[in-house]
Structure formats: structure tokens, C-alpha cells
Image (tube, rainbow, N blue to C red):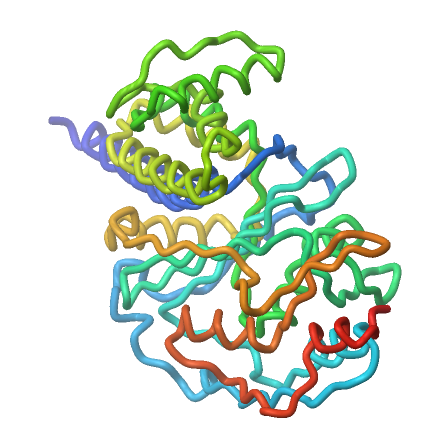
Amino acid sequence: MAASEKRKRRKNKKKNTAAKAVLSVLIVLLTLLAGYLAVRYILLPGREPEPDKGDVQFEDPLDDNADSDLTDDDQIDMLRELRASGDLYTVLKTWATTNTEHSLMHRKDVINFLIVGADASIGNSDVILLMSLCKNEKKIYLSSIMRDCYTYMVTPAGEAAAKINAAYANGGITSLVETVENDYKIRIDHYVSVNFESFVQIVDILGGVKVPVQYYEMNAINSLAWSDGEYDTLNEYGDEVLLTGKQALRYCRIRKCDVDGDISRTRRQRQFITSLINSAKGVSASEIPALVKTLQTYVKTDCSVSELVKYGTQALTGKWYNYEIDSISLPLEENRMDYSGRQWVWIVDYPAEAVALQTRIYGETNIELSEDRTTAMDVVRSGGFS
């Protein structure tokens, strides 16, 4: 074989490896998000900053031990939750602005991605999902933050208290990231914004996804299609039913067909995620260009190209697609109450929520809760909503 042909093959092999690396991490992010997009179609938001294209220094992506040793910079300052009192706005602001130099929890073996889906018609972020990838544990924690959580935020228009999905509409991705960090005291490493249409196209490019479909679920999928004015009827049910992209989307959306509502919908979402990740494992080299083109069109992120290559390489070598997936919705039942006044919102005990989420992801917390503290729920119950 001529030397020039060998060089050409090595060059093509390198390009293919890089493409697989980028594809791998984005497939993981997209597949994890897809099952959690609920009732509404998610359109690309138009006000996010362009991803940083600059050079990024990072450790050897093939070195699994690179993240195991923590430096002094990783020490987290202890946050003592303040005994805030007064109206609700004061309690929310006091907690959100209670920070020290190293108060946001983070660790080198944990990567926190904030995955966002936005409603372009009004600009709100209808999907807010924290994906915490824990390499030492070989586990992925998915934490869906309900969009109706009432919280303090800072936007270019000033300070405000509103539903958390309004942070994106009024301040873009920067305000939303800061709001989540301030509420939960966890550092967000990167964001990913996804157009819902990308999910449909990726499923179709993969040739569909096989999932278990029960008879009543088949009927519910078809009813949803008809209500959307579409008539690609599903005529099969069983243990392994091949769904198109749009059918898979409806599979993840249906819930009113179940007595237990969201519980069964969550079951279908987890099943879909597992099936799609398994499908992604078998992607051939010839399919990569179309997938990458689709992803580039519909995905926005602050990850640079070099960071995507790093994460993608680690995803391949570390087999992230085999990690156990642990999912939860926030706020937890014990840390929330509903309030219906000028608007319907979740009132949240954010200090308790932050303790729960930190402990779940990191196995520890840097927050001390005082026994005689005044919570947001206490304030509302006493008539201090404002």
C-alpha cells in the first residue's frame, strides 16, 4: 500500500473518531432529554449566546484517573442557612444571595449539564433538566425542575420574583443558569439547549426505536396524533414495537390514559431513553454525517469543540451509555406547597431542596439548616406572600 494512501486512511480514521466522540456526548444529552419533554413541542430559542469557539485546555480525555484527585481549589465553603423572616420575596432573595467564594458544590468527577427546552411563542423555558454525570459512581442523575417554581431571579430588567421558567424569557440562558445555581447551590458546568424537532429527526435517522407498547397506549398515541391533525396511525402493540420519530414523541407525551398519570408516563420515558441509547450504540460510520448535521442544526451549547471532543472521547471509553440512570422531579413533595392567588405556583423550601439535591449527587452537603428557621412555606401560610 502506498505511503500516501496510508496517510489518507489514518487521516480519515482520525476524522471518524472525532465525529464519533462529538456524536456520542450529544446523543447522550439528547436521549436523556427526549423522554422528559412532556406535553408541548419545544422550539429553538433565539436569544442564547453563540458557543465559545476558543481553545480550551483540558486533561487527557483518555485518562480516567485525571478527575480522581481533588485539589485545594475543590474545597467547598460551608453555607449556614440564614434565619430569614418577613415576606416571601425577602426569604427567597436571602437564600438566593447567600453565597461565599466556594459555596457552589462541585467535584471533578461530576459534570453538571443544564438541559433546556424553550417555548418560542413566549420565550419561557418549559423544560429545565439538570443532568449530573458522575463518573466515579458510573451513574447519571436526572433532576427535572418544575417550571412553576416561584423563585428570586436577576435579569437585565432588574430583580424579581416569578416562576423559574421566566428567568430564561427575561434574561436568557445566563439568568436561568444563575437562578438554578443560586437556588440549589450546585455549579452548572455547561448548558445544552435542544429543539424538540431534533429528537424526531434523530429517531428517524436511527431507523426508529423499539419500545414496549400496550394496547391502550397504542390507542392513546393515535388519539394524540389525531388531535395534532396528523394521521400516521400506529397499528401494532407488543413487547417490541418500532416507532417513528413522531410516534416516539407521542409515546413520551401521553399520560391521561393511565390511572396513575405521571407515574406511567415516567415509566415510558425511562423505557424510551433506554431504547434510544441502545439504538445509538449501533450507529454505523455511514450514519454519522447525517446525525452530526442534525445535531449541529438543533443543538446549542456553551461547550467548545475541544470540550465536546473531550467529553465524547470519555463517553466512548467510559461507556457512559451503560451508566445507571436515576431520575427525580424537583421540588420534592415534602419541600413544596401549591399556592393559587394571582397565579398558580409552587412555593419551595429551597434550602431543604439544596440539601437534598447536593446529598443525592455528591453524597454530602455544605448546608446547615437551623432548627428554628423560617421557610418560604411558613411565610405563605402566615399570609406573607408578596
